[in-house]
Image (cartoon, rainbow, N blue to C red; front, side, top):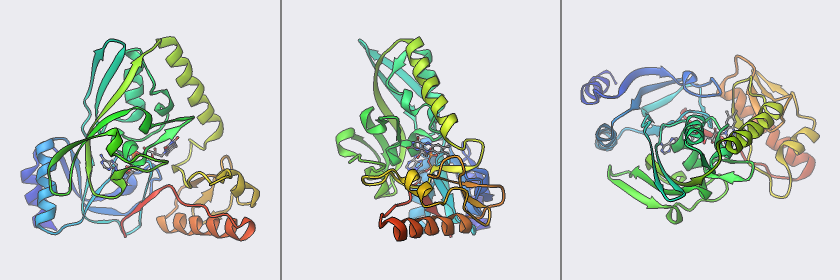
Amino acid sequence: MQNIYEEILKNMPNSEVKQNELMSKHTSFRIGGPADIWIRVKDIDELIYIVNYANKNNLELSIVGNGSNTLVKDKGIRGITISPCFENIDIKWEGDIAIVNAGSGVKLPVLANELLKNEIEGFEFASGIPGSVGGAVRMNAGAYGGEMKQIVESVTFINEEGNLITVRNEDINFSYRYSRFKEKKEIIVNVKFKLSKGNAKEIKEKMDDLNGKRIEKQPLNMPSGGSTFKRGNGFITSQIIDEAGLKGYKIGGAQVSEKHAGFIVNTGNATAEDVLNLVDYVIKVVYEKYGKIIEPEIEVIGE
Ligand SMILES: Cc1cc2nc3c(=O)[nH]c(=O)nc-3n(C[C@H](O)[C@H](O)[C@H](O)COP(=O)(O)OP(=O)(O)OC[C@H]3O[C@@H](n4cnc5c(N)ncnc54)[C@H](O)[C@@H]3O)c2cc1C
């Protein structure tokens, strides 16, 4: 890996390239072993270079955005792991319609605040989701009745062959926590949102209200990957986990949050194995008690 690292370092001067980087530093779970090579990519040509390089050298390429929906396993990630760090925000007006271009590395709360400053409404629901624009589109992130599907106009990405492509909303196959980006290793670079002119006071009130609800209900003071499980089909997942008596249940350092049973939290020294064992245990107990199938929402990578 040393030769590969040196070659990449030489060819990606505008990005940040590291070797054996602990992924616990880059995930909200604060869990995860080392990535052989970790690159914060800041330049589009360098992104194309690394996709081609990985293809040519048969190296696994993984993507991590802000790491807020990802559990990296304890032995870490082989090959190359990239984090797209495009942080541009550009706003254009067409009458009362705001066309907002955001780089895939922009954090949703940062974008929400920029939109607030420009009196643009429609993004409030996402203001408390701690992900990047790229990760949010891939996951069709949503909350409080809003989701990416409703506001994305088009997405520009690098495909598996290293080509830059733009697709419109209707070609993204958005559905609940799903998009076409879950099927292929397409790396999102830029997202164009269509939003509208609003009133700063009302936007701020809505953001404060929703974020107040988060603070009240979610264990935001503990590391987690957000809601660990998907919404139930005809039932509320966190409620059924709670009813099964699992609130506070612990395996190693992983615990079903005492505040919100839908969250598995890291109490300080959890391993990925602890989290995965607890996920399996919760799924098993809920199925045995109620015959209901619950599915994880978090993405698991590495070995
Ligand atoms: C406290 C807390 C609260 C949360 N609340 C919500 C909520 O209300 N609603 C909700 O939907 N989610 C929520 N989440 C989960 C998470 O924040 C979202 O899923 C978010 O959109 C993930 O973005 P990310 O950049 O952190 O993605 P990551 O975890 O880094 O990645 C998620 C997936 O997207 C892929 N990916 C990341 N960036 C790109 C890119 N540029 N191109 C292609 N693929 C990419 C990764 O490979 C991975 O498979 C919460 C998480 C936490 C910790």
